[in-house]
Length: 317
Image 1 (cartoon, helix red, strand yellow):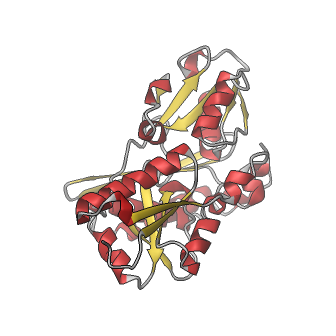
Image 2 (cartoon, helix red, strand yellow):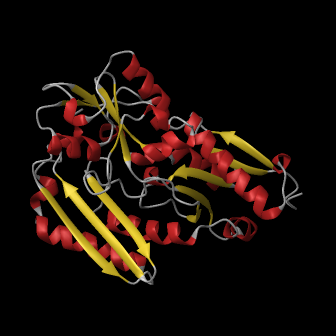
């Protein structure tokens, strides 16, 4: 057994994708430590982000809405660790918590799912595309300013059903999530990282625990994926430097090739008309410094009014 006097309690959201991620974490811990399913208890915790579906995230508190209640359970000791989609985790964590591990990163690309056409280029003028992500909305408007882009909330399977029901002509989803629940076949077009750079943290699963919980840290150290962890440290530092939230269209993509760490960062206005980006190559030794430098370069290039000029507009669907 675990030596804890009970099962290891994993806190997660209750969507199909969230449960798949929790199951992947459990399977990796079982394999690493010779444990069985009975040594774990997956506890579903409903978050404000799950409950509030009728407004953009930017209006109701941003991406922390998907983690707040789970982190509260972690702080209170009701769970031993929490599993999240890394891109949903705020850059500032609650006191006493840290991201102790990252699982191997999945595909970082976005997928377009069309109802009657397969590619974004084939959509008729004025077609309606739904997305809850300001980054995806801005990148899409940059590609096709003629399209109508609307706020489109709900978990992955809910959005796919809304698409089938005719609510929109197309939508955009993270390919990683589709793969994790075996729905990648629904994708009608895979968008490249170069043309459609992902969100910071996209495709990665983060595991959060209490600082000082040595037993949990030992468990998680055995499954922490070093390359993913380094990349996420850089991407989260980049996001923090830009004070990024669900109100800001921000993209980032990193890759490690031997001793070379490549980083690309981008910021856009919500209408996609104004874009600033930077590309850096450094050693993987200081990932946070790389992310901060990329963020500072973009802030300098964009100027102090870049974000302020459209902050109010970013609240609109």
